[in-house]
Image (cartoon, rainbow, N blue to C red; front, side):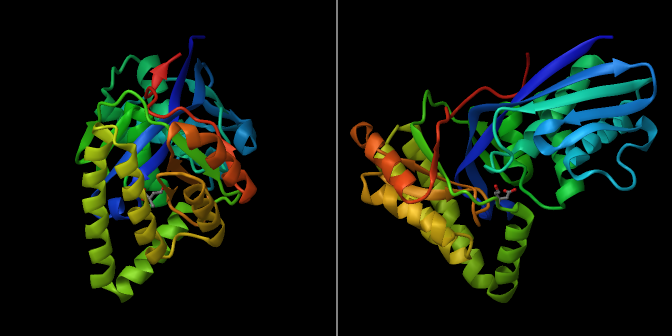
Length: 322
Ligand code: MEV
């Protein structure tokens, strides 16, 4: 039977995490490491999944039951994506699916969102639905919200559209920023962070100190807009400084960690223009920008401070059929 393979990129948040959950903008870039999903139509009415990167092997359940009851953890995003698709576009027969990732689900590169986007794009192609990128975004974002309950959707947008995006909560604005390259250096803190837990922690602070936290979000919004200008001018020095400001606000929201701070300071002290955590915080990755001649010493400083440098290409292509 006909099969199709689709891939989507991972993402890194440049500016605006957390505040983007609350009706504000952020800037996100798609990274070269990709998620791949292969989908095949089958005659029997089952949904079958192999996703060895998240320890799912020979997972199988009746297609009519997808999305209901207990779902194995690693299968959730793929299965809910299938359920949401067939709810809108009923299909005959079953589906056999396998996923493969070029990046670890530990990094916070958005593997769940990328696989959700791949599943919806693959089903749209396989069943000739011709969904537009925005329709894929909407269905994939709904899937992520069905599972997590929270999130801005920026990671879904990066997986669908690729490139570097100015993104507003829920996809109210998704504007590609026309840049050719972005010389980001990325350091992994070695700790896996849980986005929903961190969003909830910040929410608790916002409930206790609403004016303080709203004020911080407003300042981050200004930084996102300033950062956008610097990015479009390739003014890496200013963008680095803006990253430093953003990191300060993220630390005051309580989502930075000593490990992240150590790596960030090491990068700054060894010549980076600026450095910040990227994503929910609590672990995952930091990002920085540095002048060409300092890149080597910054990378060494990140490793010496206990981080792991991850080589990435930023501003990469969005979801595509392979
Ligand atoms: C997580 O990578 C970034 C957050 O802003 C959550 C989101 O935007 O969905 C904390």
